[in-house]
Length: 366
Image (cartoon, rainbow, N blue to C red):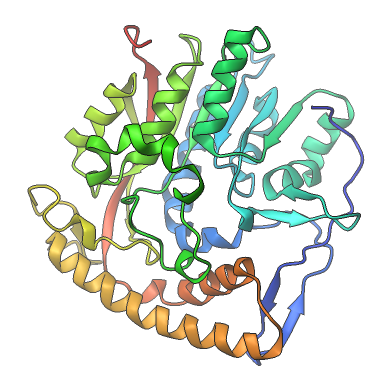
């Protein structure tokens, strides 16, 4: 992919809703454009994911040698708004990855082409823009499902068009059953597995019962295209017992060699956990309240469901009122729902432990 040094002239066409009910269109934005869906994952990103990236930057994890003269390429599945890359900006030689969620793209002012928020933010960042101009960094953010992207890479290796990935991988993926649709996505009839059901089918047994299908699929396919010195940084919620997570990681061909950061964070209100009731033996350690008092999975599910019900009712009202002003696309409904639902996050008194793991390839893995 050719990298242009031109500063993109971008307009956001996604609509927002003011408290008065007036519909507005965002105009060119200077600086970082946040992916609004991350308002629902703000605590996990702020308290675990970003500190883990900072810790690895300080260690020189993204650099290929002790002289710190060259950076590894960084591969991200679920590129989002690109904050992953910006946190390690001057330590990497390439920003690579994919994004399939349409809510994470913005329409350009010229024509109908779209650019991922990740690539847009990389190109807008002053430091990286300078590196792009010098052709010091390679950018390739494809519009593709993560598993398909990795499988296509493997096929290109077999065909002689690509080499094994030799670098650093990081990701913060959802953990939920494939049959569970997040609250915000239910307003746009969007589902992580809808268009690529067959790609994930091999991973549903036994991991779907634990909400680990996405990670199982991505880590397994990733292991097939990497060199022995490639390492990964992934964030997982410990609402699933550590032993189950470790088993999944090992089955995928990796070793969770280190817990880089572990923090207690508020549960994401957008994520239903009722499917967890009875999925495994409840040891009483999966959830707790703000005061540190342990909650059973059943009690945590009850609290989450109660707040989700209130948030859903409010989101329905907001979307209905907005629809009277202008017809909304599924994408706009989804974004309005996320913004409305996020207002209820502070009312949820359910917390969980979240860990950023450093993974290394198992030698015996194929």
